[in-house]
Length: 112
Image (tube, rainbow, N blue to C red; front, side, top):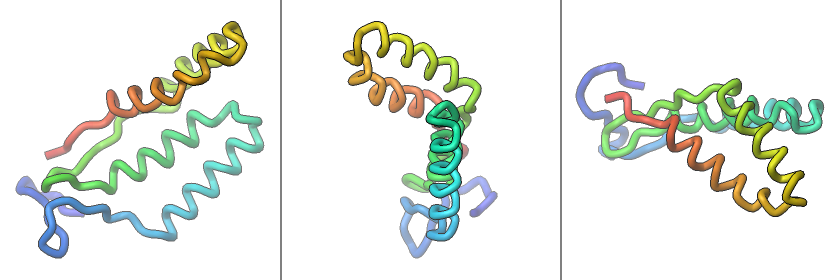
């Protein structure tokens, strides 16, 4: 990870991912365990942890990306979406994926 002000490059490319396989496996297993043990209640924490790792290791067109979302910020939405899904007998659940993607985009930016 370069900390300078200019555009980042790796192997002559301006867009790349610099995360490692072992890190990804570790974060994914930890996220799965936390979600399973909590019966899904801590899914927002697992999602923020894994997605944050992915975004923070992504460089697009020479600009490193940064994820600023928090599990607490997502948890309130998660509860609201769960209630709406229950009230609508599962119908609102089809929109939850879109809502999560929108929340991720809202909390993703470029550092440089």
